Image (tube, rainbow, N blue to C red):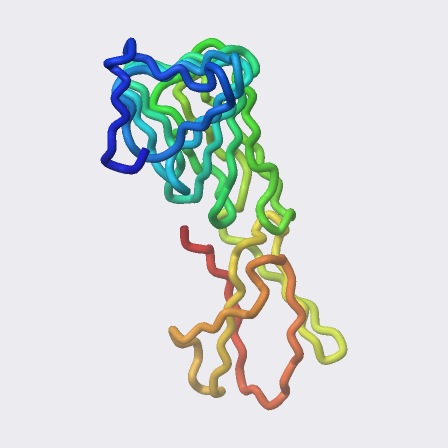
Length: 231
């Protein structure tokens, strides 16, 4: 169902029986006028949005034990199901969540459903690590409380300590592993210039927590800093 479009099931009993006879998928960012019932006879998949978006249902949503809800998120937005008359789930219904954006930060909260998912419990498969595999996510699952999930630990947004070791003409710069995703920036200036606004990203620094930089004796001054990534 495309954004702005409606699937009106009020004329067929007011309910879309999803996956009643064969496996079916309901997706998009439009609106179902009526209720959605995943009967459990066959597998029903609900995938809000085309990429990230909101699927609205004016009535209720019922998820059977074999129902799969497929959702995507990034740091600024997430897929969402909005049901006007509530959401219920049988034990075993599954919500699969995929991060399609940058590394998640501690405290990031995502409202996957507009209300608590009652019944259940729902099985939630949430992203385990960032794309580098160096930051392990821990989550607070509040789907049964208010329909949300929250990153308890992800990218550390507190200012890190940048340490350095000089050895054999090479400068090793490192920072804590839970700050992987921060960007190392550098600038080279004349001896009397100091620090300017002209920073250059050190290639590859966003996916690691250490870099090795050759020391160039002819460079008068070189400055480094770590920058917290933008959403």
